[in-house]
Image 1 (tube, one colour):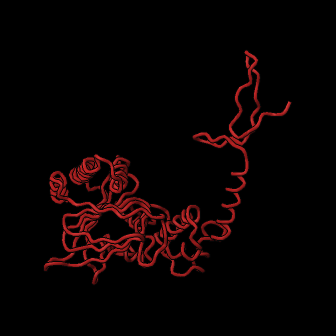
Image 2 (spheres, rainbow, N blue to C red):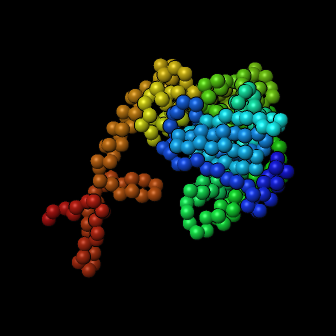
Image 3 (spheres, one colour):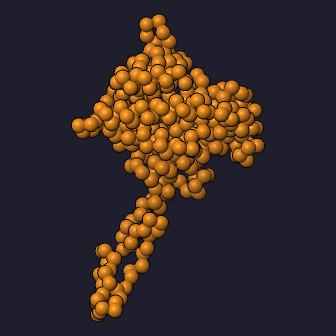
Length: 326
C-alpha cells in the first residue's frame, strides 16, 4: 500500500493521475443493482478495469485513474481483467476515527470482493473527509484555478493515506481489532442482503463461531443483532431524509422481505416504519407551526415580551413575532 500511494502521489504531481467523479444526484436512493455509503469512497484502479454505473452517468476506471464517489451516491460496479492481468483495485472507506483500505479482486465473473483489508487509526478523520468532499465538489466546478485546486487537494489526500499506512501500528489486528473490523464491515455492507456472520468471519480469517463469541464477549451484543440494528439505523435515516416507500427502504437496508423488515423495525423501535414516519411528520409539522427562535443548541418556543430600556425605547422582538397590542 505504501508503494502504491507513493506512486500515485508522483503521478498526481505530474498531472498524470486522472480523476473521475459521478454527477450529483438525490442521495440514498434504492436503485436496482446499486448501493451507497454514508461517507465518501475512493477507488484507485491498479489492474484491469472497473465499469461504474450511477443514476445520471456511467464511466470506466482504468489503471492509474482515481474515482471519488460522494457520500450517499448510488453506484454499481462491474469488473474486468484486461491484457492477461487480473482485475485489482485499492478502495478507501471512512469510519469513526478510522480509515479502511482494501484490495479488491474478481471473486466471481465481473463481481468484486475484498481480498485483503486493513484498518488504520485516523484521529484526523475530519481532514480526510474535508479533502475528499472538496475534491468531489471542485471536480464539477469551472473556476479559473480548478486544475490547480484539484491537483493540490489530490496530492494532500494521497499524502494523508501514505502517512497513515506508514505510521499504522497494526493494533487493530488483535482479537479486539477483529470486533472493530466486524463493525466496520457491517456498516459498509449492511445493504447487501447476503451479509451474515459467516461472510464477515471469512473476510476476517476466522470461524463464524469464534467471531460470534468474541463479539458477544467484547460488546455484550450478538453480532446478528448488531447487523439488524445497523440496518434499522439506516432505515431510520431513510425515513427521516427521503421519500422512499417502505418496501424501497427495506430493500435498501439489506432486507429481502418488507414484511420481515417491518417486524424487525417494530422490535427495535416499538412501532412500525409507517407509524414512525407518521409520528415524525406530525412532530415536524407541529414544531414548524409554532413561532420559535433557533439557537445553536436549542429551540426557544417562548414568545418573549418587549421591554422598555432606560432611553424609553422598546427592545426588538424576535423575527416573525408581533409585539403585544397595548
